[in-house]
Structures are given as structure tokens and as C-alpha cells.
Length: 168
Image 1 (tube, rainbow, N blue to C red):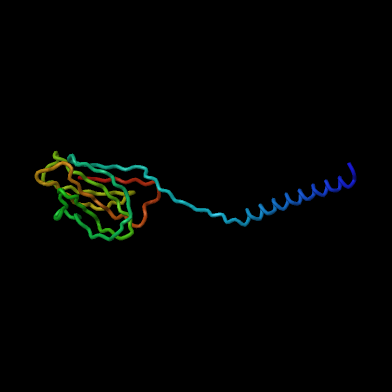
Image 2: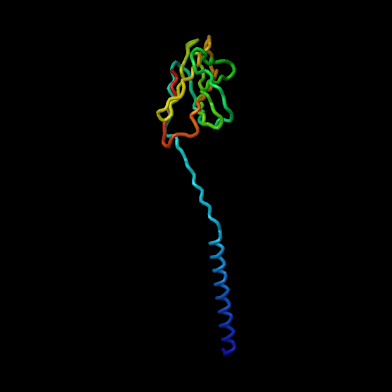
């Protein structure tokens, strides 16, 4: 191989090395210039719940939601209970816009005693809410519902937490 050819080959080799170095340097600059976003998430878990229902009523846990409007209390006294009827009734504590609200649906059955009043209490991590007072109609009917809603404030307790619903 001639000396000129070796020189050209060495020059081409150096150009390739310089080009590779420039590419690597450019990638390093791009990576270091890229913004990295870290997002933290807090998760809460439901450890356990308990629903205790007396006198053959049925209860369904409807969970927690954020209140889209403020609502006055209804059914907080057994002198003015919410009675099961053909239209779904609602008994609730005072609900504040933006607060978390727990909802439990109570269903009537034909086997429930007529004109019987029940207190529905919600207990979250040891704090009791309510009671709300509901009443069976005369005669008792299957499948009528009352949603019992409880304002629990702006946040849930630290996870893990437990809650229970008592219908007595």
C-alpha cells in the first residue's frame, strides 16, 4: 500500500472517530438538557368494612364521592325519619360542597316490620357520623331504597383504615 493511500485511510479513520465523538457528545448534551418530571401519587386502600343490618333490611356500600353541591341535613331525627317509598329517598348529614361523602343504600324487604324506625350510623376509623333515621312503610314492601349519605370532611384518614355501617 502506498504512503498516500495509508495517509488517506488514516484521515478517513480520524474523520469517522471525530464524527462518532460528535454524535456521542450531541446525545449526551440532549439527554442532560431533557427535563425529567417526577410525579408522586398517594394511594389509599380500603382494609375492611362491616355492614350490620337488623330486621331483614339490605344494605349496599356505594362508596365515597366528592360532593358536587351543599345539602341540608335530612332524616337526622326519628321525629322526622325518611320513609321507604316508591321513589328513592335520601337521608343525609349536612353536606358541604367539595367534601367527601360516604353513601350506603338501604333496601326494604317485605319481611321487615311495618312502621319500624332504624338508626343508620357510619363509623370511619373510630369516628361516628349520624345517626340517620329511616322508617319502613306500612305495609312493608320489597325493593324500596333510601340512600344514607355522610359528610366525612375534606380527607380520609391515613391508610389503612376501617369503616362500618350499623343499622339498628
